[in-house]
Each structure stands twice: as structure tokens, then as C-alpha cells.
Amino acid sequence: MNIYKILSSLAAVLLVGTCADLGPSFAVGPDQTAAKAVRPAGDPFQQALFQGYKNNADSEYIQGNYRTADRYYLKAIAASGGVPVVMEETAYWTKPSGLRDQGLHGVDLETAAAMRANLAPWIEANKLSDPQAAAAQQLKFDCWIEQMSEQQYDQAAECKPTMQMAAAPIVPTPQAAVIAPCVQNPDGYNENGTLCKVSVVNFGFDRYDLLKSGQNSVGNQSAAEQSASLDQIVRQAKTIKPARIDVMGRTDAAGPDAYNYGLSDCRAQSVVAELKARGLPASVETRIVPMGKTNLIVPTRDGVREPQNRVVMVAYQTSSNAPLAAQPDAAPKQDVFGCGTTLRHPFPIIK
Image (tube, rainbow, N blue to C red; front, side, top):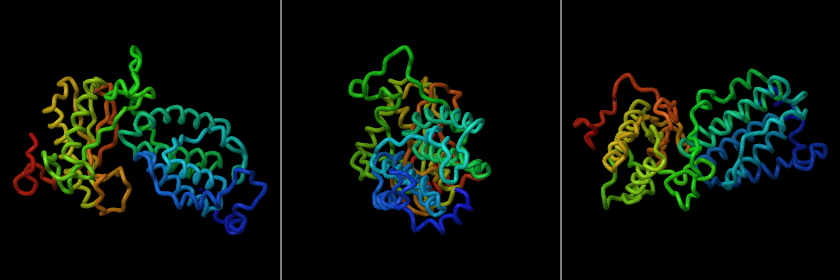
């Protein structure tokens, strides 16, 4: 993804899809058209991968790196259909090709292999609880390894995955017990070590109170469905027996950052209070993570009201001292939201 690649695109753009020496798998024209035509399906993690790979492919195409563009378009197409898309394998980037005079070798190859071994299980463990962060790390890795193979180290540094996130704890499968299939154990983990069901609690615009029986649905979630999600979290906590639950509150992109920080904080507080009322074991510590309008579940422009982004999600931690499952937004110097106050946001008073 070097700016100097643009020079090669001026001479080569008319040859895309017709160069026989590029091999039988090279078909950037049709793959580009297909990627631009599809609409993302699948879960939020795959939707985020679809958008990220398509954007990266468009950038590579403009810069004349057609092999990589085609590779990313194919990944975008797969992600849009719900097909699992994994991180790049280091072996692919060891071969000289196109702008890669030497490929990935020596210390660079060892570093990339170690990064992948550390990052891949973290992504698998967090792609449901924090799909945006997990997808972002996968996209960063693929960009980073490509830049390393071209010896574009300054640009590789910009793509490099965040090691702080990659080092976050993975929720392990208990070694002393065999995890039952989800049909037998719906409130636990499947054979891959991920949750059988992910609970999401939706909220109304500019609100942090939970729905009451008979109220209209919020974000395609009725009061009954919201109640079922809360009960499911309690059941999961009793089944998984975590030391801590990270409760991540989010808002949509409407409103200022400082205001949304307070709103996301109060949404998480509402969920924690309700979980305790519904029987969350006292031994389970709760940690509130105000995300504000960062790491949106559905990426939008700033100012856009998107119901699916007004949510609270949870992540289970095996240690009370584990790093947070997601990075919180920066806390404002002054509380401009005022949750629980009679001046602006009296519903409900969080104690």
C-alpha cells in the first residue's frame, strides 16, 4: 500500500483481468464487481470484515497492486456470505510476486508468525463479545504482513496490530471437563470455546432505562426479548462461573462524545443493576466499560442514529485481574450527561 504503486497503475489499469502471466486465480475485474454488488450478511464480526476488506481492496486496486486487491475482494465476498475468513497465512507472503521483490523472510517472517499465533486465538475468543475490535485486529494484521513482505516498514508500522489487545485474556475451555454441544448446554461454550448464544440488550434513543412489560420494541427487540437476554446472561454466569463480567455500554453516533460517554455508562449500570436483581451470583464481579460511540457495532457516519449501536453486551473473564475485554472511551472532565438527576435524566436513578 505504497503511494509509489500509483505510478504503476497508470500503465497497467487497462490490462486488469487480461494478463495471462498473473496466473489462473487472478480475476480482479469480476471479483471487484462481485464484491461491490453484494450486501453483507452474517454476524457483526463478518460484516465488519466485509467492509474492511472491501475498503482495503479498493485502495490496493487504485495503487496498482492487483494481486492483493483481488485477494481482498475475495475475502470480502466470502465474509459477506457468512463464510469464515481467517487471517493471512505467513507462507503466502514468502514468495516474491509483483511489488514483493523478496517476500517475507528471516526476522520479519518469525515476527509475523509469532504475531499470528498470539492474535488468532484472541480474535476467535472476542469476535462475538467485541466484533468491531476483533475485525479491526484481523484487518490490521493482513495489512501489516503485506507491507512487511514489501519491506515498506514505515507503512507496516501504521498497520501493525495493537499488542495490548492481542494480549487480552482468552476465555479457556475448562481442562477438567468436556464441553457439551450447544444443544445440550445452551448457556455455555461450544466445542470451539465460544459462547453458544450472545446476549445483546438494546436501548431506546437517548435512554438508559430497560423496557417494561408491554412497551414497544427497541432496536428490533421487544420487552420480552430484552428480558430473555438478561435472564440468559444470568444463566450463562451460573454455568460458566466467571470471576468477572465486563459490561460494555454503547451508543449510536448521534450526539457529542462526552454526552455519549455518560449515556453508555448509565446503560451499562442499568444492566448490572438488573442482572443482580435477577440473581447474578454475588461472587461474580462486574466491571462497567463505557464505550460511548466508539467501536460501533454497525459502522456509520458521525451523527447517524442507528438502533443496533445502542446496546449493552457482556464478556466473561476467568480472572478478576484480567485486562478489559474492550478499551473504554476517554472519560470527560465533567459529567455532562447527569444520569439519575432530576434536571435532565431522571430515569431511572442508579444506586
